[in-house]
Image (cartoon, rainbow, N blue to C red):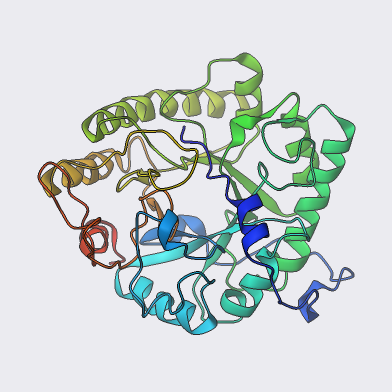
Length: 372
């Protein structure tokens, strides 16, 4: 599995948010309902757009959004930018957004989403909980031992923050799975120790469902890791990577079949249904970000990109549930973003490298996974 980009320390140094520290929707006494009946995940038609509350740093980025969607380079998106982004996502068949979200009040995520997204538009959404970097757990960055009492307490506190500040105030838009609000954990395998019992405890207290990223490029075999994954409600990979795009297609397809067999075993053991959502990976290129070293991964041609799409479509309804796929929309540093982009010298198609700048990637998504 591709490691999550560790930009938080850098962004805190470069950008000091002037956003308000509190808001009317953060009332801690807000009543928590027993069910969340927002847009039902199993009924959504269209792909999921993963969106980030980070600024656009051109010197570090390998995707450069058009100016209508990101008015000010070296800055965060404005409310107007997000409004135009919403229109773009609607136009290209996306059904819901996945907002990267930290429950750490020292980080600007909540206020950034509050001033741009939560109160702007009507698109369904759920959060990708940032549980690895810049956290209030121990250690602040990296994998977490969930046998530590302090980590268990803080995990519950983070979920409480998400429920009270995001899910309940915006529950008419918040994506649910059979009456429970969806929380995506992008690096689920990094939560080691007895994480399973903690997920059960949290679900008993809050109307939430946890979807985890299983690491499809190298599915877990450790018994404890599998016990923890069995405690999730579903699975959705965060990123797919091999040095060659063709290898990524083959490995992810083969391992998705293996993971479906694991899910079938989970279902036989628990009597529960686990949702399995596919992932579309347009590329991977973090070559401009300091300290990173993976070789860039691009499809050799548009035809190879379409083979990846076809592999997802062929497996939908058998290996995968007919939902999604999950797509990185605006993570600009790692080169997978499908946001409408500028065609500059670094991003135009070249021999043996298809980028699909402009709306090339969006056109493919709309054609194959857009809302009917």
